[in-house]
Amino acid sequence: MSSIGSDLPCVASAEVADPSSIKAAAAKVGEHLGGSGLNLLINNAGIARPKSLDNETLESMSEVYTTNTIGPMLMGQAFLPLLKKAAQESPGSGLSCSKAAVINMSSYAGSIEDMYVWDFGQVVSYRCSKAALNMLSKCQSLAYKEHGILCIALHPGWVQTDMGGAGSFKPPLTVDDSVQGMLKVLSSISEKETGSFLDWEGKVIPW
Image (cartoon, rainbow, N blue to C red; front, side):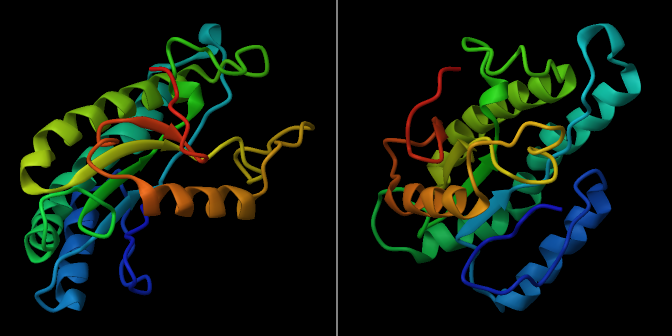
């Protein structure tokens, strides 16, 4: 499920591997907004399969890529009318999350230049899908900028979650610290950052 962010309670869920589910969620959110636009779309859905390169399969790669990369693309397409409406309703020419924004939850593991914690786990399909998501975020930033919509890829940190904390190693970051950091970043970014790959502290991550 992807988070549909604004000052609204959760009004719809979407299975991001199912285009019809995404379209239904967008329609339900639009109905709930009653003619207003959507300021913030956070594509938070993500899965990982702990496979090495030798053990990677077509099925695993396809499943992970569909959820982690294709899903955010379809979400952006489905919610674009609501995001455009929010941008049109907001005065001023600058970009911000309070105007209209797409935030794709990426991962440092998607950095090609810096192969983050490779020795801890290869997770090849996950790395490939997040690298592709970063490119999608860049493409969205260029395509949606003319509509007044900010787009970034955001790494939440290595967080103590069910997915991030699998195995005996405890990740260094708590959920609360990650969330507080990301909220601070989202409140401060502008058109200067659109198309960027940032972490939960606002630091630029190498592509």
